Length: 206
Image 1 (cartoon, rainbow, N blue to C red):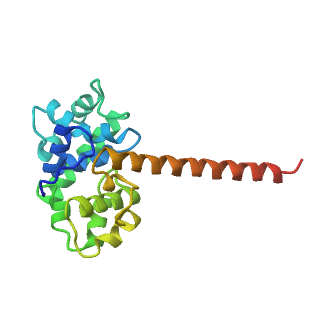
Image 2: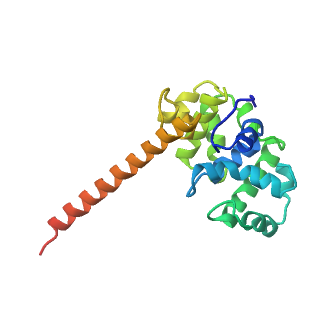
């Protein structure tokens, strides 16, 4: 994994870990839902500290699920839904051990082309269609992982010069632009829903 300095957690120690430990990066992506992204991407560092200073896929995969859940839930919890996400992270580690010889980077380093990479990422727990494409875009844009067809696999998230996802965050300014885009998209969705509801109400028989 190239020693590129990611800026997803906006915390030097956490971003250094994300930049150098592929498993930490995957865990951060799993946790990036329903909480601020800075917390999601700092949580791998917090998890490493709670596990005695290392993140090891085999060790996490072999832990008692309740013990891992307790580690996630210990205040401050590593996620809004700590136990559910502890299960996702443990399943992620099982897949890394069983399918990628315990090396998280092999998820992408051994993918022959973009569609294969997308398929592999989508098969991981916590990665739906959109998040999988975002992760492919992050790998291609910031980490130099660019198998043939990666841009197509990333979809709109792979477009150069966009500020629509974590794939485009390289500092505070771009984080603000991505956050602004998401807020505008949510506002537009709410407005459309309200318009639809108003139209349905006016068309209802009285």
